[in-house]
Image (cartoon, rainbow, N blue to C red; front, side, top):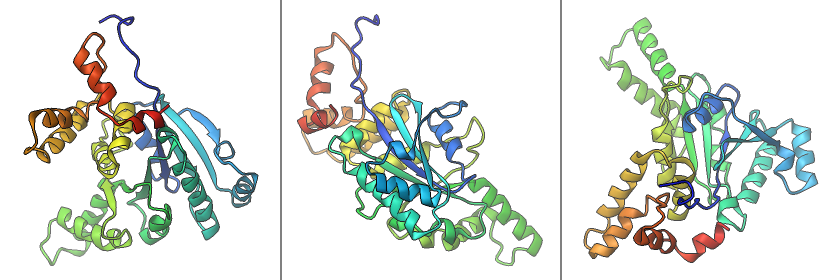
Length: 292
């Protein structure tokens, strides 16, 4: 198919806020998600993202900064530079989340929050202090991203070797128990989280983060995410398609085919009447209007 025959996809942006202290692995996660070794492109400072001068003055007084990045053209990452050290700084971030999640257009909203917690910290309660409060309206999914989990496992193994292992537990099992006792207790029962390893290496994999994020989003936002992030990765689309079909096995064939194709919104083949009609009509009018 020639370039002239291809129809361009709608201009869509998927927006993620990344939170975490210095050296939490935020930039490495960006590079792995976007499959690049290049540094993120800096778009603007926090002042460009806020609506009111008063809020910007608050940022200047606390020293909290934010940049937005465009590692790929269809995804925007907002990254907080600095730790959340006070209630005042928390309120600033809450206001930003509330402002961006309340945008009228779906494509302009904040769609997900990745809250990064490095596993090499001996005081996890400090990193997780504001995890439950970062999105007070609970309208944006917050994913706990535990980075450097491989280093955490190595540390547990060394502790067992130094002090012996009276319980006869393997170091992997001991690390999982320790993780639950030190970290998960601060998240809450229904919190979404992932454990990431080797994000500093080019072969590091963040598939779990993408899948966990997709699982926390509603269908319209999942569509945005698939178009923006996963065009070249069929694995997630296939996984979601299988899960969708399993929930509608008692429906008619047309409904099953419809559900099966929903996770493939980036299919855009000129000259195929079926795919053209499917792409336009498979999603509600509200989705397309909100994306304009």
